[in-house]
Length: 411
Image 1 (tube, rainbow, N blue to C red):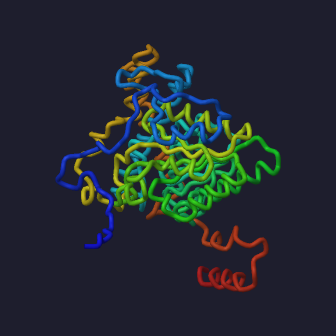
Image 2: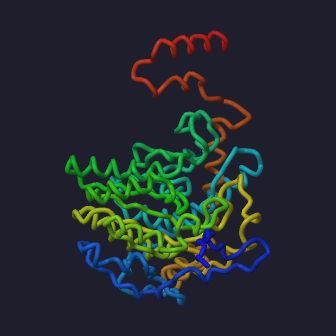
């Protein structure tokens, strides 16, 4: 009898009503992965794409060659930024549930990805974020009021009412506009990096997408161009295990790590514990130095877990096990860094509680200020003439007629 081929469907480890199962996650012991020189050949660092770089062990000690040896002040800044990101997220989630804003996406459990990477990069580097990278905005010093005004689409909305909530940007702070069309930021970042290299600048580009977006053609276009031209770019895949309701195996994570696609294109690939602040910082620092010294691009897979729903329009209870985030084997990034800082004598429970109270008050006061510039239901409102701006250098006649008609009807 001839053997018939069968269609393979990726295995989802746990569905609603089942016990959470993360046995599929390949985890290396903390400190076990060697740290190669930044100018190492791609073929000599291929193992980094299969193992997992980790610094913090189960005893909250920092171990191994990837330990970045940050000063206590830098650790405190990192913890502060992660806490502020989480508290901001929680408040905005409540605002959406209360009808104050229309939509929101939290980064619960992924705070170390944005904060550690943002801190490891230079302020002059160009960042191309995804929609769960609000920590980058906080690291770059964007006031919470500005972020909240964008969520409200009010008179101080940086996007002038033209973007979905959480699609922030800041030209002054080198933060490219977030797009709801997933994966577009990958080729954009590579193009920017290529231009920087052509101009002889020392800056690099960094960009982030979720693992589900690696199924988009833009992902592969970006890797090809980055590899061929050795662009100074860091390409980050945030593997939080779920692309909305689709398990990461459907994007190809079941067969091989996402980081392994880097060596396949001729670039370094690194798999890192995305909930380990120190490991994320160190890996990003390594990739940045590699890019700045002509070593080319690096594809980083940050292994983490999406602790909350995909967005406020999603219900994860319909497709994954209940309370699964509590069983994630790599823990919580904030709790892990806090425990390490306490262990080395640079933090305490009392200081932590005081910081939480301070940041909660900051978020509350920022919201009170933001709503003075307008809300969803109350003025002041955005000037409708804004819809005709920022598109053409010289407005064409058909738009001039439309604008005149609108003004006439408005009056």
